[in-house]
Image 1 (cartoon, rainbow, N blue to C red):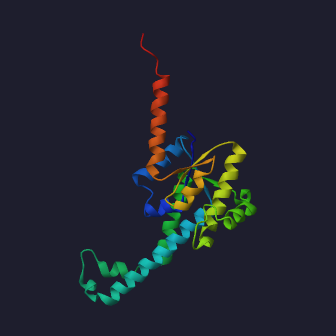
Image 2: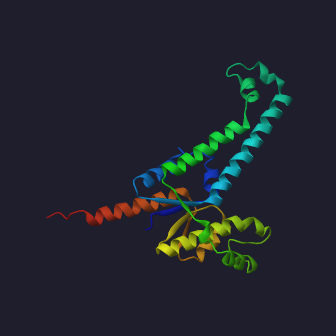
Image 3: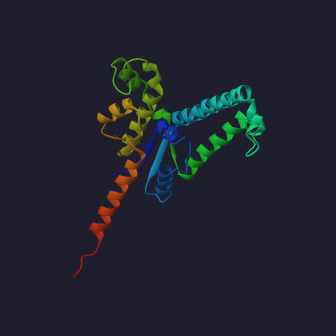
Length: 211
């Protein structure tokens, strides 16, 4: 079992950017105890930040529409719903949520894999041959994933290691099927389950036999 683990952007989104959820907190604890090694890329960092901004802008628009379409909200005083929506500051909220994300990366001792290790030739070869992570349809949307995968592949190759990839993306899963280094996990809890099984097995093996 490898300690290396990569969390795709979809994982953070699925947790609604909430880092004290049971699974994300447990992965952080494993990383802090050196039982897990989190890695990511600048592409994923940028994707998470972009998704935060997008969702905060949507929330701001909904709150603005709420004030326009439901003025009765001004009369609600417990809690003061109107003042909450009226003072909503998208820029400040984005700053806070992005800071929370970077705080999680820092507390998890996350390593940033250098994109210089990615191969543009490799990525375009996948693109023109329609190999995963490129699928049918809007293939250009998969370029961020492709460069991330290429960087992770070369990072693993340089160290002679493997890496768990936690992602809900089907194209990422298809790529991992043909990779010797990237092992796809469909659920965040799978890494924790695998770690716990491995730990239990090692404890059993190392347990002194009764005489």
